[in-house]
Length: 457
Image 1 (tube, rainbow, N blue to C red):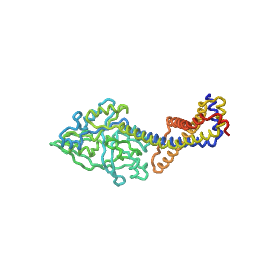
Image 2 (image 1 turned 30 degrees about the vertical axis):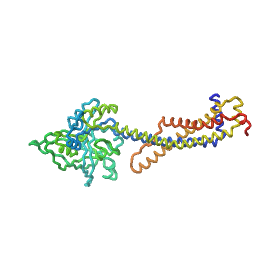
Image 3 (image 1 turned 90 degrees about the vertical axis):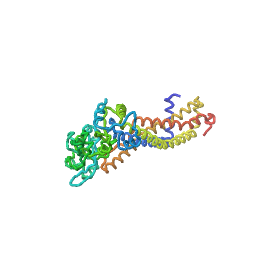
Image 4 (image 1 turned 45 degrees about the horizontal axis):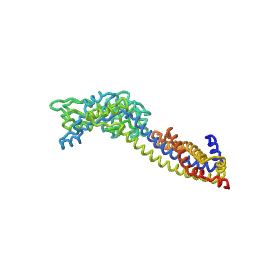
């Protein structure tokens, strides 16, 4: 039987019992819609998470820390053996920073400067965490859509506030832009060692001053608020994401604020040079991160990159998509029962028609193809309608979510996505399931005795 004749017969037969066939097709559409809606949420959330990570500018960043910390030093002292004989631990000092910066494909290397402080605004104290931001961070997507502007220069006495902290300072955060606040922090002042006394900067302190220790004195710095951001621009070893006040990195280095690494340097008597808590190495391209990360590990440092997290993230979302797909397919499985029921009823109603076809020379294969065509048409129409309905459901969920977020003064998000592969895959899946559902009715119709079918009334 020709494909054109087969299609014409299938469409005509479906029109004869249009109500029953429409309800069956609607059942397929609802099943496909549930599958598409659930998978679209999984895909949308994955794209949202990946986009937020990409906007943070960290896909090309490697966080570097020294294995030689206080806990490691204490363990090595008890066991009297090195942590790793092949790559001994090294202090993360200025020489290590320059060596990492000299690696191929490394754009810049800057230290983490993060310290506790007290912000005074309108003569009221607000304890919080401050982090230094490099000037290159202005191109990160985390600052897109921010209120105000980025720092006017790398040495500007300016600050950017995280939105939640800005709300603590004022009921109208945007009104803070252009206002001044006072940063009160613990300043580190080096003590003389063996008669030597020099003022140390945050990035290059005198070696003898470290050996003599340091004193802590309160100090104040006046800053002007120039911007407010809703997202956290950093994360990693130093957990910059927990900071709520951001200042230029060059300014943070000149403040000489006391950090945890300073106490570690004093307690760790084997270190004669100042060290950093951690460093961030910016690579030219995310594809070059593994090579640079391996080179840094070969120097004796601990590294972490966002690629390590994205591997686990992809695995997590793959499992989520699988579970959502299984639950979404349950409704489609129920729809297959409707297809079987519809085609079995069609056999009972069209036994005489089947007998006429066989009497005119149609074989079992032609009868099977006819019923397969009818099942395929229901699957195709139901799949297309289901994709459209699933897309609308996803948009409705996104709209409802954004309405709730707007009431909480949070930025809108897109948590639903129906890529082309999902739409085409859902339609193909609906057709395959429908054809599978038509196996039994088609086989039963093909094996009807033509004599008995002609006598059937």
